[in-house]
Image 1 (tube, rainbow, N blue to C red):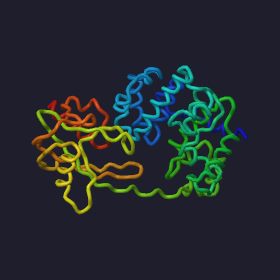
Image 2: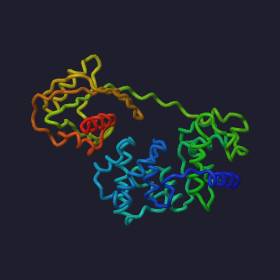
Image 3: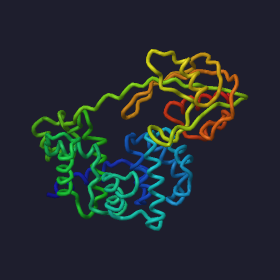
Image 4: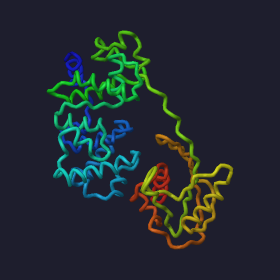
Length: 352
């Protein structure tokens, strides 16, 4: 029964990745790393994690920060609800648990934005609790090890994988076991062309024995993201740019953008954008040339967005959801998707 764990841990202690959040068993740091790693590659997360910890080294430091500052430090990682939930979660830990992350999976999972996987990772790694941490890597590994033919996106298959992990997770070092599975999935049991010749579990793998490791796991195909056409106006007045904050609900909630519209099929982008700037912000402009264009994919939609240089003609006072920012101030707010790239270009242009 323990052969799987023994072989896996022997391999992990020799070959496990050297990651900054593995330097200690601090529950807050593990929590931050796990939230950052959702939907984001490890190599990308490393720099963001260092910058985050330099600014928010403790749970209390994060809890006392504003949402806008937190979002600004999250800028570029995407899926910004993760950052908002993290901020809400640490504030709840401060108010309900005396500033210490609870040490059992059930309590951790009740925190905002924390799912079963993250709760299991924090509890097992920080507190040595026997709790599975089942992410995409683990679903793939276990489905191959036990040659499971069920769709890993279905709850029935996930429950079976959870049951199998609980049979093999060791009581002595459950956190190491979970991290070993993460590393095995990232380094050896990869999605395509698994490196079975390097795997410490080859002799236990039913998929390998049946030569079907390349066909597992079974997963229903994802829907293609919906394409959305947008136009955005870069309006300059007296050395400052017109920007506005997005709604507090929905995609990229609360983030900042250059005023943008979702284009109506069959109508000219320039005319629509000019009308939007007047109707929504009471700013009259003359739209000049297109200055940049980006494709940006979210989980369920894909933006095809063009940015237009606009000459400001006249306008009323802005509401509290819009303002004028200098090129230097563009870096002080969290931006929505590709708007960040334009803000960076404008900031660099001003410096040069």
